[in-house]
Amino acid sequence: AVAGAFTPELGRIWIDDIEVTARPEHARARWIGRVFQDPFAGSAPSLTVAENLALAERRGQWRGLRPLIRTGARARWRDALAQIGLGLESRLDDPIGLLSGGQRQAITLVMASLARPRLLLLDEHTAALDPRSAELVIALTRRIIERDGLTALMVTHSMSQAASLGDRLIAMHRGRPWLDVQGNAKRAWRAERLHELFSDMRREDRFDDATVAVVVPAYR
Image (cartoon, rainbow, N blue to C red; front, top):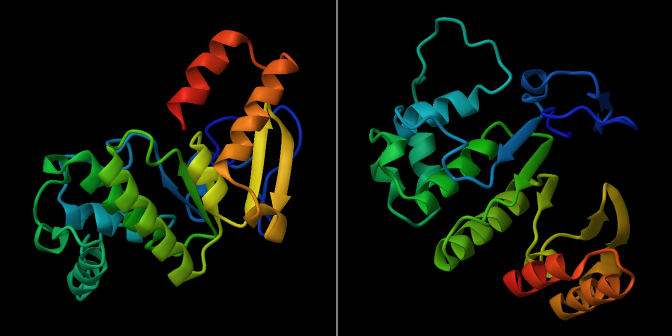
């Protein structure tokens, strides 16, 4: 709903001081940078890495018939990719579809932050990655958010990520928040405590036994 893919049944959506509730998905793109769960969903596989970065940099702008890659852009992108540490700065002219899932997700994260969005929306962006790639992408996420001073909304089912990342934690159930902690209170939370809450919800019949059996072991 935040990005515009779904229309909320109740309430309104604001990004800073701009109400976007009725705006279509493409109109919100100028304010939102998105990284999807699927590493292959956030880029155009037949375009080169440089072409994908060029499109991302112009998100929300009128593109017209100007050259896609502007003078000086390649050096800027090469520097941005070098910070990832995967040698991707040498692959600007390769189709992005040739890269691995972890490599593509790292580039997609760079793409999502190029235009300095008002909101960086991370939709379980490490869930489909192997542990090593997930660790790299999380470290890159931290660096980009801290470096650019971005506001990020991260959706995750990982208890360790929920406990260790960010300065506010909101747990949702059936569209409503049942936990909202921030600041010093948030920093005191640990993954084990979140697992205990899942057990409490089970006793209160908020989740049935089948759901608990799948969710809890999968995200320890």
